[in-house]
Structures are given as C-alpha cells and as structure tokens.
Length: 195
Image 1 (cartoon, one colour):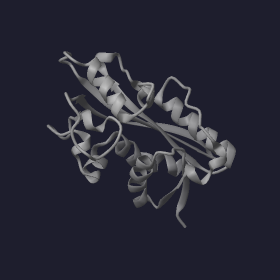
Image 2 (cartoon, rainbow, N blue to C red):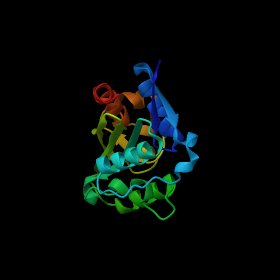
Image 3 (cartoon, helix red, strand yellow):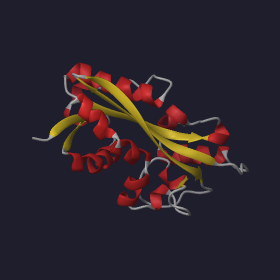
Image 4 (cartoon, rainbow, N blue to C red):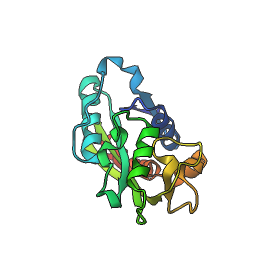
C-alpha cells in the first residue's frame, strides 16, 4: 500500500511537480483541497525552513495525517536576498506578472544579477518532524521568456541550463535541476525516518 502524505499547498503546479518527484517512491499526495475546513495556513516565520515546518505542523495538528509542506522562493544577491520568504507576496497584487515586473524594475541597470531558487521541505508525522533544503543557482534575465512553469520561472536563468529560463525547460528538464526537484530527491532519507 502506498504511503500517503498531505501536501500543505493549494498550488496545483506544486502538486503536479511534487507528484512527479514522489511517484517513483510510492508516495501518494493528498491535496489540501481534501481538507477545506483548514482554511488559510499561516506562514509567519522569517526563514523558508521555519515556514515549511509551521505549515506542516498546522495541517498535521488538525488532521493527524503525515504532512509535507514546502516554502519556496527566490533570493537575489543584489537585493540583499529579497524577495526571499516574501516571494509570493512581493507586490500587493501577489501575482507572478506583477512580482516579475517589480523585480525586473528593481534590477534595471544592475549588472550583478546572481540569484537562487530555494525550496525548504518540512515533514511532520507521528514519529517527529524534520526539514531540508534544495537550491538552484542562476541569474535574473532582462525580460520574461518561456511558457512552462510558474512564478519567477520566466525570468530565472539557471546555471545548469545556460541561455534558457526555467520557463523554457520541459517539465522533465526542470525537475532534474530545480530547487524543488533537488529537495524532493532528498525526501526518502527524511521519510524513511519519519514514516
């Protein structure tokens, strides 16, 4: 019988991406939509790891089911690590298009555009809790390109795919190098201890 985890996210892209990553491990994800009574999950911690564990604890405490949560974002060196944990809410509109426009505007005229995507995963089960982190290094481009992915993918140029944005990669190419893919491939060591 496959192991079930609740994914503490309403983001359909994350559900698909984690589903692809965890399927070979025999892990079945249950979407947060299965638990509408949970409402909004708090994200009030100052770190990606703190937010991931806070979300996983919130769902576990209310359902009693093992939970996987992620907190992901973009860190831009020239902006002192911003947008960081506020990546999703970098603008009042909190849309990918408005966030990307703001970031490109803030980097206008800046030559050093080094950045990284960060994904922290938190797992909470009856046996305990743990977190881990995956990153992908790259730079911010000058304009959005590509139609795959979501969030900052159209403006992020990963070092592992020179000349292409994350949004120009196929799902399989993205999974192979993404921050979420790298963190997800480390999940077996966590799940082995906690399930």
